[in-house]
Image 1 (tube, one colour):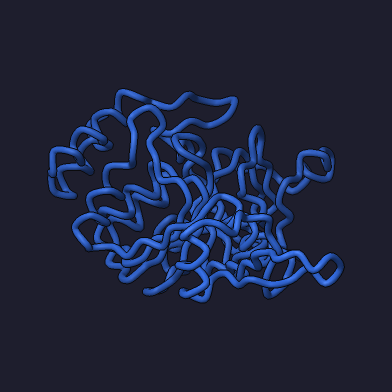
Image 2: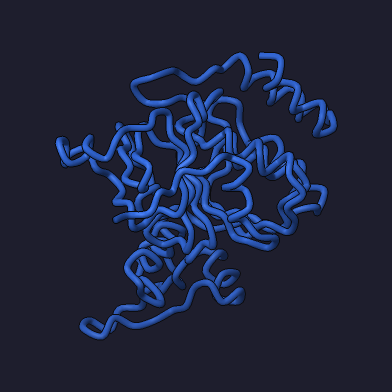
Length: 271
């Protein structure tokens, strides 16, 4: 008999340790695990690290929460608003270490982690200053293709301590349905040591037996399931609700204005 993995948000929060590296699901303003991000932001967790390719609102919120010491990402933007405001402020003020990567670098690292490999060859251009920086950091290495002799970048595996994903449906034993764009979420799940999935809807186990084509993430990869209806708001949830750009604008303006974290949180409480 498979184990029941249903937890409350506060119980799932205990799966995250100080110093953990966290991969956040979704992208930009779409399908971010906002309910869980808000819980982490209000917690006493310390020295967290974040890793993502093209992160969004949840990533930025955690960056200004005081819980994060290091960020590794390729694009940290707010769509038409420009650079993510919390990320920009914290990096410019020297409060968060930023490891600049590229999309292919993050994806190659996650692929290596997902496949259980120590590194993944990549076609990243060799004529970038980022090559020197990330080779020096020990994240990339220059290798030779054993077949052609061509020089390539090898990206060290990314193995986050925790992946946090928001999904459409799950049963109590961790089987998950994701609809619409998956972004890098499946790689994040496979690469991470623990996986917390917040969901719009709980379904019985029979749901996936009767609809096997809807299974996106098998239960054996999932550590905890949290029932969190509208848990992506104010980001969008494919097929359920659109991004609330009015709330996102208020968040952006509050952070740009330099308001403290408690004042920024009121943007979500009073919407």
